Image 1 (cartoon, rainbow, N blue to C red):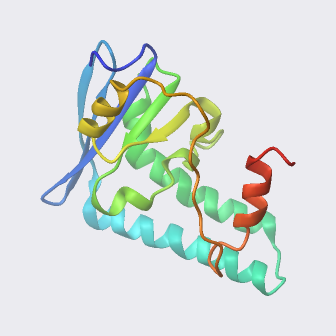
Image 2: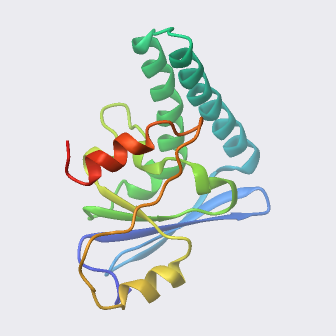
Length: 173
């Protein structure tokens, strides 16, 4: 707890047997959140969201655009994930920043894009991810060396806009 700044919360997820649970930690509190969902429910939600993202990519590739419907469907799945995984954990948090520590199949979930029905998580919090609470603690204790962050990406068919993103990040917008 000592390594957490004020108004910063670390949320670490675990899967135990078939139960998804989380611990939320702030400088002044530690809470356990049990029975967020079952692992099979999480797997289904993850699969449906993946299907919607694949559909968005495929529709864009073929020039089909029903953006309002695609957004509505994606928001439905992002909202379901928020309701099950993040809403019960962040409801009473006094924080501006979340560090998410996913577990297992949660590593590719876009927690920062979860939707509560009115706003996305990024509209309420700044968000970072850590592979474990131990690594977060280790990194939090390191001195800031300054400079720019290292961003890496490989342009391929699955990520065709890497060069445009690099150009934008370098300040050439």
